[in-house]
Image 1 (tube, chains in turn yellow, purple):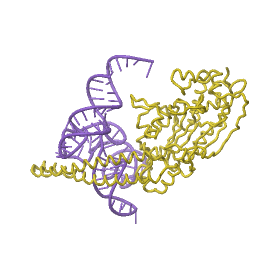
Image 2 (image 1 turned 135 degrees about the vertical axis):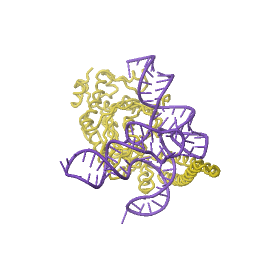
Image 3 (image 1 turned 60 degrees about the vertical axis):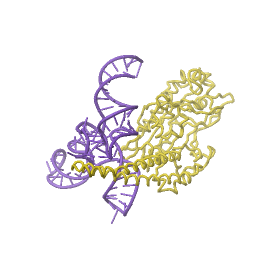
Image 4 (image 1 turned 180 degrees about the vertical axis):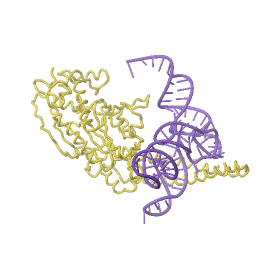
Length: 425
RNA sequence: GGAGAGGUGGGUGAGUGGCUUAAACCAGUAGUUUGCUAAACUGCCGUACGGGUUAUUCUGUACCGGGGGUUCGAAUCCCCCCCUCUCCGCCA
């Protein structure tokens, strides 16, 4: 969530930035201000009475020790009213804090200056595009037909053993998945990211800290018997490694990479656009996560984009980079780039990566801070993450773009990992 | 899953109702001493949220795994929960 001090001290800027999301920023910020004022006044009041009560208790202790029982009794009688007053003030303070917290949770992150205003995906800005768009013959097949024809992708078996949207890969298809994961992990570790294998389930506190709860409750699979959520992305467990931590400035930047399967309910999405691997409930993804000083975070974001571009080039996929507009951006993000690859048989762009700077929005919930040697107080760090990359749609594009009469060609960079240059029947 | 023992600051660890304003030691940090290293000594050394001042700083409150309760007063007593360790059971 956004920092209260930012909302109070830079009210104009906060309102202006939030307005890009097409929300009533003024009303949201007014309410936050009122609740915060009430909270402060209540605490001042409560603290004063608690101080008085503490003083009285000390006095009673001293009197008892001195054997002055009567005076102690008199003092004790005076605590009754004070206790009642502090009890009701405590209740009021807790209720106000809760209301303020709940309210702040409904305010999305403030878009950064570069973010264009806009409501729909059509208003996103194409930053750049690279790679030749392949021209396939009229008989080009979408990936789900290729998978069936070659026998390495079985949507129907997934339906049988689990349900729709849970793909089964076999043979060369399974090997291709493993090759991509290994390739992405190697590239990330070469770039200085530390590899993490995190749990695939998290508790509610973790889901809250990175912003999945309460905003996206219905998007996650929930194991209610144990109160755990299946992760929708490795971002959740990996970023939460640093929840409630104060790191020394010298430890920054922290660069982590993790491969995990990702689970998403995707309730309500059906139709032609979700056929095959286009939108599934379980897919594999390699995620890069960074914890940075605020002054570096936007340069780092560009660096992460360059990393992802390198992967897409190595895979010889035509791609483009989008700068999301305020209306299309995720709830917790301050600026997001989406990377899309061209899927030649479907003739459409598929989102394969989303790279975001969360500024202090996540770290404020995480209580993730760092300490500069010359600063007295710890400061909130910036968190960033990006897919590098999400597999299912990468596989879809690879299959479609590289289909030939002889088989499906594997990009050179990947061949050391697959051990074969062509998927054959 | 069962039984027992535990959870205190960055670390070790004392603390069975007011003598704790959380001791002591280690680590860290600033200084003194000092040929160098080292050692000794002295000061500082948690977080959050308030209040008053604002080059400074003073001050209040809360926090001893989490949540409740008893009490004028709780790290300390009571209840519930979580976690760790040891043993048993089960198990890849």
